[in-house]
Length: 387
Image (tube, rainbow, N blue to C red; front, side, top):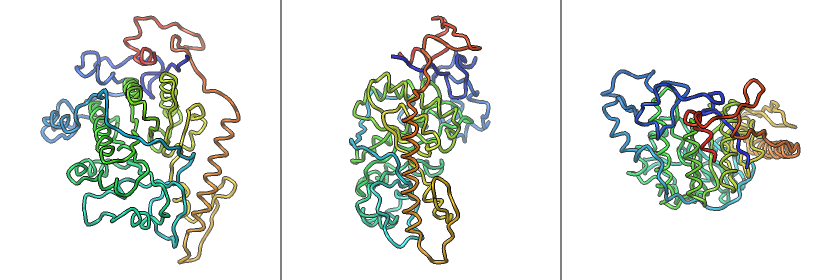
């Protein structure tokens, strides 16, 4: 088995040690250490009002308790139905400017456009929800729990008390992704650990309500990926995971580090992993060695509302008269875009060029292969993690 040797984070070069201040930190075992930033360099200086998982904050213990801790448990009660997803699923943002239902097998909606704490704003049943977004009654809906922090925090605040998961389950949702609480680099590292715990806790709530949940595998360093590897090993019924490639992972270099981590996990576990890559079309070549991938984005929807049409892989202006519905244009764009993604994926597979691999026992430096001694392993957590 050959695994890819990777740096400790997506920003750090191969062999970069953790920061000098990490060695004596009480949270090092949970955190794994940082190489890119100091946890306290952006300290607000107001611990009495700080709401982050910062050890200096007066409310640090309350934040940890609210999230159910900072570590990853051995087992989570998360259910996931076995279903083969297509290569491309369109993200539909609303039902405006259309006069008929979109006849699509699968469609993605934003969770927080569907869920609402206010009972008088909720959809009465699955048909009403699909009619609101102009989807056919037979469309399988995937909910994406990816949004800005204010929407995520609003959901977390009311999720349990207003039984949002139970409400969503009644709408006959095919799958829902766990919330992608932020792993921001301008906040203390414990905030990442708390947000991972919150995402998994919310995944359990969703699953308890009867929803099929796809975990969101946010990660910052090698330790995080070790945790996800162990999580998938301890939950063999979970094969689908989700990552978002629209913001930080839009960068190919950073995306490559994360995808290679997934490839290492797939190799280590010896079983398939299906990645739902939100906004990941540009990275299709990186996904070639994964057992399965589903691209989800709103490009056809957005371009349609910008009055553009996809023709032979290029977007062209397609002006419509005032008051003319966009149904035909949207249907055409989704079909053309799905075909484009299929053709691109087929071309990548046809090249038959495996992802480059470096044995974990060596590191390339200035074009030469350098052996790694046992003394270095404690400063290089990525290597023992791949065993």
